[in-house]
Amino acid sequence: MTQISQEKQNIINQIREIYSIISKDKDFSKLIPEVRMNISGSLSNAQSKSEIAGIEGRITIINGFPKASGEIKFGVSDHTARLILTAKEFDNSINFVINLKYIPELIESIKENSNLELQEIIREEQPEYVKEKEYLTMQWLINESIKKMGKIPDIIWDKGAIGKEPMMRLFGKNSNDIIRKLEQIIKLMKKKKI
Image (tube, rainbow, N blue to C red; front, side, top):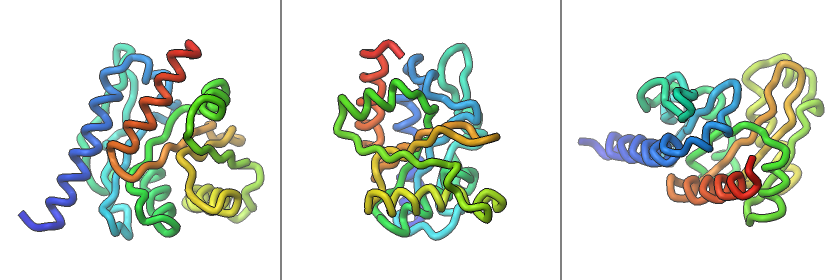
């Protein structure tokens, strides 16, 4: 087994670890957006989508529980892969992202009751050339966050735009980092009865 394939296996294992936490918790279904959810993890020096793993077909809801539609593979995620690639240009320690449903009360609760850093992005502020070119939006979200905060926060969120679902995006260095943040979010959801 080469060093690269060991690193790839490690990323797949970490995504599996995050997914196993998500898939056992019925409450987590409330965080699955209409466009469904993905967990993406990247090789440490990823330069392209082929170096980022995700769940093929994303995560949906079956019998009230989050359920992966397919296997964890490299090169199958799109939006979340572009988020990681752009984030890594600013902070190479970011290797994981998961997209979550935007819930206003949850955003407020995270702001007030956790140490997670959040940054809102206003999608209406996107320049026309970004709106017109499908693949620029994820890069624009990251760039706007850097402009406003000087770094990548734990969560970048927006209230959506015409034809675009509101979304929260959770960033982390590794599976432990993502799981720790997700556990805080779930705890707040249960406390607030969201």
